[in-house]
Image 1 (cartoon, rainbow, N blue to C red):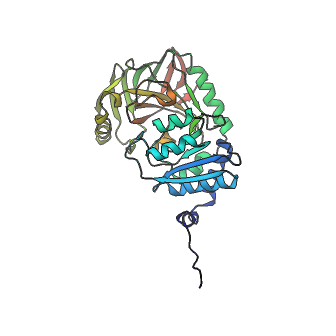
Image 2: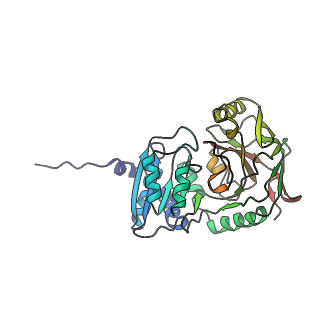
Image 3: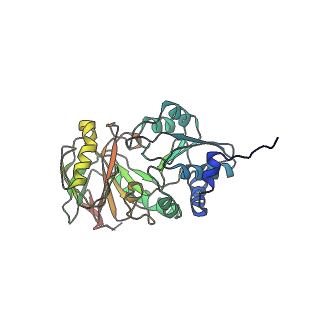
Length: 336
């Protein structure tokens, strides 16, 4: 009896993986995550990002790791928890990579896995173009700038951001420790986005005041902003959203989460010289010459106190940033 050869779904998908994508995946697994032979490497993906998941899985296998590929149903919002079985798998792994439609960054599953010693990178919303462009970069160079900014932000008491388009917000941060998102995840419990490239921290809850004008891009599926989103901030909360359809969409996204969803959760500065503005917030927030301010959850690695179940970043172009009265960026140009 003749045996008919068949291909697995992974095998079929491999045929669609380009050489540049596979090269970028190897950089992610080998250079960024420092995967070693026999380590348990878990790739969490969904149907929308399967090719990227398989490329990472292939790369891990080539490094002789115990590579595990898991597909879940796409989450509905950024910050929504994965199924319990996947959370358990993450916590048991040495290395976890999450190319998914929605972000697993600000989830208990990710935090618990890191606490258990897993090295983790999340790739929320990643596209093949962004993967190829932004991972073919000198991550030592990106890391150096990210660490330099962390050293500026760590002792800071107050950050002020202004732009010609109307942003003028004061963000108290006394005692909050910044994170340098270098993309080099070598130690147990460490975490990064991929592509990486930012320095960020959590503002003190209930203290930020002013106006944010989001003119670059907005997370939550909103993408590139056509009409600026003006957000009025009082005592650490976004209390009013002014603008067009994008402003209405942002307000609608945050409303189900109440006051925690409107928390001013993050201040970040992009440091990836390969990143460009595309509407994919994962890449947009890494663009040099921009800052981002997020709403919602600021627990996770940020050290904040709000767990809202959602985390949405808004990108601001050409900002002037003052740290304790000293200008470190003027209209998008670093002065440090």
